[in-house]
Image 1 (cartoon, rainbow, N blue to C red):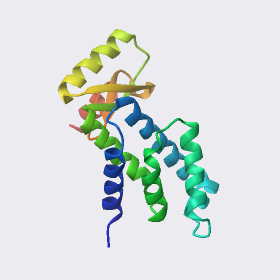
Image 2: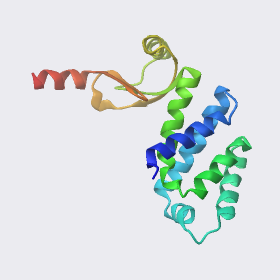
Image 3: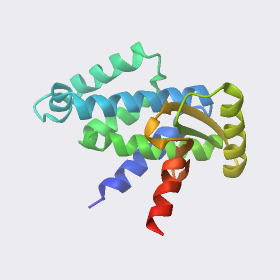
Image 4: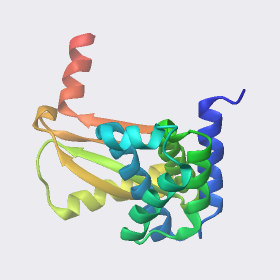
Amino acid sequence: MIKNVDLARKLSKMLISSLPKEKKTLLAVSDFLGLLSELYRKEKSFRDFMINPLVPSDAKLSYLKAIRERLNILKEIDTILSYIIELNAFPLISEIKRLYDHEVEKTLRFSKAFLILAKKTDGSVLERIREVIGKLLGRELEFEVTEDASLIGGFVVKTYGFLLDASVKKSLQDVLRS
């Protein structure tokens, strides 16, 4: 029997291979998968609808197509959505998204990253962090910036498979541990 992670990996690779290798398109599909993942995780009625064996697959696919069309996502993903429904793999949607994002990063040499700052800073500092971390990773970065005052100072950068904690909070914790 195929393992869930293997199935999610195969579906994510099929998805990325069916799409044009354009940054805008690949990121839009990532956002779409993120939306489906959030809906599945947070909305009981959506989750129940998607996993209910009594609901016809065509009805599920039509519903997902309607969401896709409203978000102007390419119809090339309909085949994969159909596979996900047929294989009852919707509970794997978060894992499919995670693996898809990893494939996008490899394909585009681009990473979505979370930059967590202790406090708001100006654009030149953000650009400098993007430049240095991008050079370190060998890829272009797109930051989603948030603030967390508990860091005291500094920042944290998170991407798929990479974490840099340059915060004062982390430094103080390291001092306390030694």
